[in-house]
Image 1: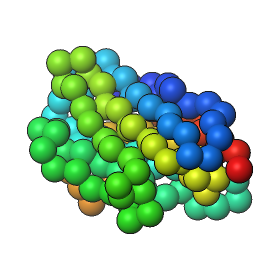
Image 2: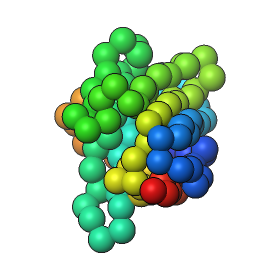
Image 3: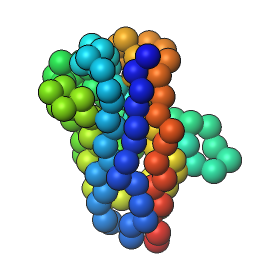
Image 4: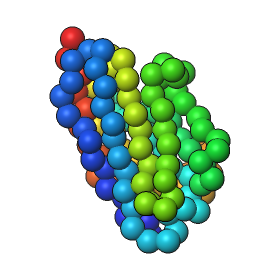
Length: 119
């Protein structure tokens, strides 16, 4: 088990920034890839970004490249998603998830944090 807790969501105007954090407990955290997903009302959940256990390799949804940055600090058991130049279409509940590697299943999920971008 990898308990995950997201924080940092909120209401922001278009063009603004938010920093989401995903905190975990336990030593296993550093062995997992961590991903961020989001789900807007009435839509399917979509992948946003992911980072490997080492922090060296990252992946991004095409529409967030250049605006979002994922990073991790294994010493603090934390992964952050820095979001800039936010758009109304970035609105949704953001979840972090832990899995073995990119493209694998993500069996461990947090409860989500709401991000709302107003136009």
